[in-house]
Amino acid sequence: MGELALTNLTSPMILFFVLGLLAALTRSDLSIPEAIAKGLAIYLMLAIGFKGGAGVAEHGVDATLITALIAGIIVSAVLPVIAFPLLTWTTRLSRMDAAAIAACYGSISIVTFLAAAQALQTAGIEYEGYMVAIAAAMETPPIMVALWLARDTSAGSVFDRTVLREVFLNGSIVVLVGSFIIGWITGTEGLESISAFVVDPFKGILCLFLLDMGVIAGRGMREGKNLSAPVVAFGIYMPLIGATIGFFVAQLIGLSPGGVALMTTLAASGSYIAVPAAMRVALPEAKPSIYLPLSLGVTFPFNLAVGIPVYIYAAASF
Image 1 (cartoon, rainbow, N blue to C red):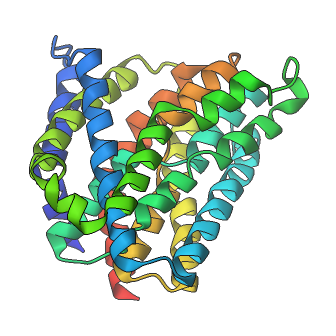
Image 2 (image 1 turned 135 degrees about the horizontal axis):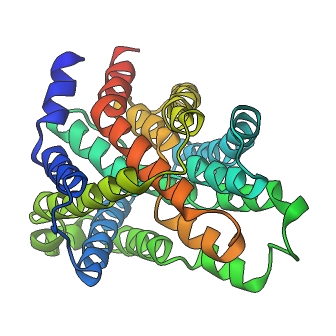
């Protein structure tokens, strides 16, 4: 496991994240324009979605795929129900803030997923191509559960048209699911025809994106005055709780070691794209200065440095 952790920590992708983190903490003026950063994110989701769809086309729809989809949805819906009482018992956060954080830790980080997939590829461990579909399926259920958890103090109905549109038509979900469907329709032939676009440049663009994520995480850590010690602790132990649940569920449904590692990673990750976008509309009282630095500045680096190597080692050992 030590060798796997060292390989992960010294990969170009992780080191570019560290570079961005250090640049922000030392108050460098390094930044990537927002439009470019959004373009990088769209590319990554398009590429991973398309490759996942092509993987499903090659594999075919079977009982394991359907079972994995259902399991992913259930896991993502259960995690906020666990996270919410933990936050209310151990911190002084408001109900709204606790619900927003619970949504983040039920939903997933597609970049953490990408980092784990890259680590598996480096280690030569195969995984099911349809795991990207599991990732997409796990995005929205926690948002709906969190809105239900916050309902007592919400002004009006949280399940209005604006919220539902934000949840289900969020740009990241549209790109991820849409490119997955296109990859599924066109199959391996489609993947081969655009491999120069979705395969070859992937690692380099991921480095640029993680550089930007490092800058954002560093700024959040530098300015995160609202992150008390119990809240920061939650950002470390909650991923381990999610990872444990994801690991045993993946083992139960019979995923390959690579699939187990990715399901574990998904359950351990925290959203900082889809959920914050939805929370801004649905729960405006919740403070982004708490849930965004927590998921991006605490949990994301923890998973990159410690979590992913542990998850892969555990999946390969059982």
